[in-house]
Length: 197
Image 1 (cartoon, one colour):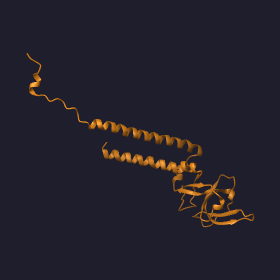
Image 2 (cartoon, one colour; image 1 turned 135 degrees about the vertical axis):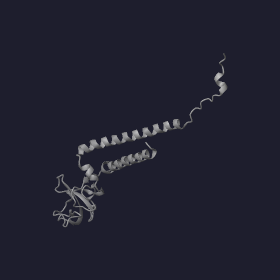
Image 3 (cartoon, helix red, strand yellow; image 1 turned 90 degrees about the vertical axis):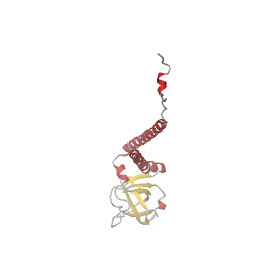
Image 4 (cartoon, one colour; image 1 turned 180 degrees about the horizontal axis):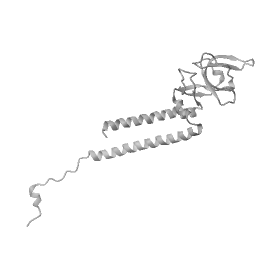
């Protein structure tokens, strides 16, 4: 294979490895280490900033810090696993002084019908990556763990193979670059040396 093609193939392979590693870090490792939770936006209610398929990572925090303009993920009903991610458009308090928030999807014409109570809030948006959620939404949590392990082992194995090939290539190169041992030059009288009739 010509050297420029081999070089382009190596660059492309490393770009794929680095991209997959970055996606894995952003989607699974960083949230887990930071105590955050990744969710996938499944509808277009938060477009254009968060189109369907966006991976949004939320961090739990103090409900006192939630303000108008924050994007929050909350349960539709306390204890129900179904969640919604919308922007806070209004803040209020009930008769006991407990905070309440009115939310609305960025693409929606009207605010959500129900006020959100503190017990429903799962967290405030930490970061969001458009379309990365599509990759994670096809698998269950258990499958995600297995796939993460397999992907990590695969990437480490691939890196080991690449380093091994590079090391072998370097080991072969000096042998190829070394000048060949010069064969002794034969002179016409040397052929008969030592042979007498």
